Image (cartoon, rainbow, N blue to C red; front, side, top):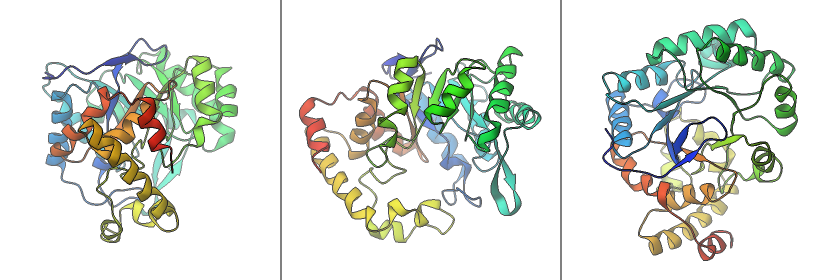
Length: 318
C-alpha cells in the first residue's frame, strides 16, 4: 500500500488517473541485448518497484523488448501478492532477432502472440495500456493498429496507444480507431516533439506519457565524462552521440542550470529536469527509470514540483 499520496491527472480520455511520474522498466531488462543498460540485479529491480509503489507511484511502463521478456517477468514478480496493484502499461512490435538484436513487426498475428506472451509474463488478465513500440515497418502501421483495436475489443487490453509516432502516422491510424495515448521522447536533451507532435496530441485529446525526461540519465547531475567512460560496453549510452562530444558539453551545462534551480527548491537536478517536462500542458505523465530503491525518493519529488516562470527562464537560458 502506498505510504505517500501523489497528485494524479487524467491520462487523455482513457479514464485512468495517473500519478505525474511512472516507473520506467527499460533498464531493469538488464544487459546483453541491443539496447540494454548493462548488468542489473533482479532483486534490486523488485526492491525499486516496491519502493516506488510505497511512495505513491501508481503505474509501471515496460515493454516486451526490454531484455526480450526479462523486464516484464521482473514486473510480474514484483506484482505478485500485492493487495493493490498499479496500472501496467507495456508495448509490442519489437522481437528478438539474431545476436539479441531487435527485429520489427507490425503484423497482426505477431502482435496477437506478443500480447498473449506479455500477459503471461506479467501475470495479468488484461493489460491496462498496450502500445505499439515503434512505427516500423511504416507501411504496416494500419495493420498493427487494427490488431491493437482487436485486442481491446477482445478485452485482453483495456486501452491502446502508440510510441514514437509522428503526426502523419497518428492521423493515418486515427481512421481505424481512436488513439488514446502517445509515448514520445521528451526532455531538455530532446525537444523535437514540441513543434508538431505535442500540440497535435493536446488538440486531439490524446494522453501523453513522455519517456526519457532526464535524457537517459544525462540530466540527473550524476553523469560525468568519467562515469560515461566507465559504462559497461553493453550499455547503449556509451556509444550514443548525446553522451559524446560536442553534445556532451552542452548537456552538462544544462545540468549546471538545473542544479541552481534544484538548490532553490531543495531538490535534485533530475527532479527539476522531470518537472520541466511535466510543465508542458500537453504532457500528462513522465516515465522515470529506477534501478535501485535508493534512486526513488530523490526523484519522486518531481511529481509534485511546480516550477515558476523564473525557474523555467533560468533553465532555458543556455
